[in-house]
Image (cartoon, rainbow over all chains, first blue to last red; front, side, top):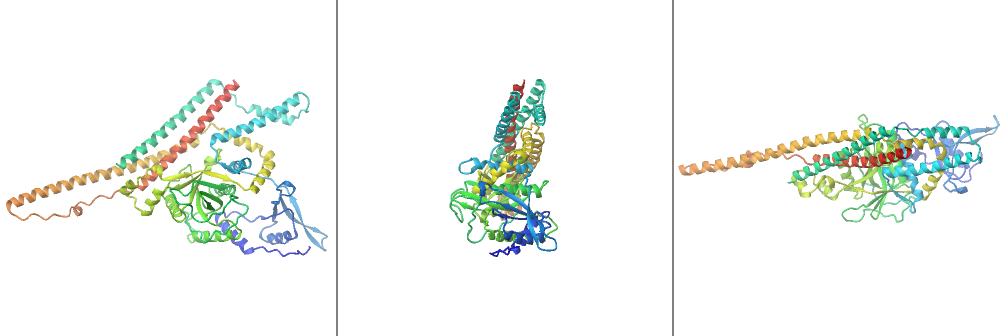
Length: 219
Length: 359
């Protein structure tokens, strides 16, 4: 293990404090590892990683490349493994792990919304209403459908060889559109519209009622 | 209930990666009828709030937390936030103020904005107009003029669109709360209606350039793996079966209307009592006068004028604040319902168009 040229310090007191405070809010969360910004692993990482191996069993080291080398912000994760000749000089090697992103539903919606700032000029967006979301989702489906159609055309004209699994997916996709008898659909549609209109009317009525009450009280 | 503690001292922060707007304005915003015209939130804060509710707030409990940031001209920029632990009865020795001070001190070490600018709360189907919220927001706004309360509705968000709203108390309501006088006369003088209690401030979300790069990365990485998730989400957006959400809202609305009617009955009784009392006073005075005239005609000294107010104690006027809050809450419910129905009518017509095309 090469000795580092410049000593690095980790404020352990601070880390402990923050962990205590965090535990008050989420008592079930544990320290899993540590992260650092930067492109690669340095000798300092080994020392810090050793410290964290005392806090958590088999800690994970995450690097986020904010210096944007290779034009991308690469996010990588490592665990440390021992290597070397047993009994003689032992070293530590960081083995990479695959990084996957998992979302739950509300988080996914939040991330989608935040992602929209990439497309606006001054990186600012307002919150969108339900229908705008539906519009956005429809646009996405339209793009996906055009790709699928393109693929189908290619297969038919013989440019691309047919793939059975893809074909099966397409079948299940087409079958997902529900087939409803038009009369039934009409009745369902009308009853739903009636419900909604009635609820709107009642809500308006309630609002005017409390406004009236306000006026009467203040006479 | 989140108790606030002022962020003391100077805003000596130079948070590089967050809130990239120019100008690090410090201290109070400009004077005028409303100090804050727009709220600018970092993407980080949005995700943190979502996460906090997801992990700690299942059920009907509300989760709360503190917002940190700074004020730039008439914009309130929120750059970070931290959650507040739940209040449970068994840890009575938990000191909120100490927790806040510790948090802020630690955050100062890592160069995060440590100025309090408000607080956030999750809500259950939109029922957030309560006395507790009013008190908390009043104490915040009293100390820090530009503070807002962010209301996050997780159930509405799970249905497709992020529901985050920022509210402040109107200046008139601040005046009334300062006096702590909630009698009918004071409220009438201040001319507050339930619509004018809270004012909503528009929200925009802003990210720094680095965050945008991260977003591009995520877009690329999660393109393939989460496509099926997107489809299921799309189906929830297109869901025509909305009875659950609407039903819940209507039920809460009915409860509130019941409370309101009880309150109205109380007020009516009070009015009736006062008018009856007035009549009784009047009658008493008349009788007195008659008696005095009779005594005078007989040559006896007139009876002393007794203090009428001691005889007829005026009934206690009911506090109007609660009814105002109820009215405000009913108003919020109605607005939510109307928004909901409007959007769903649109979706229904879309579905109709699709079906027509099929046939």
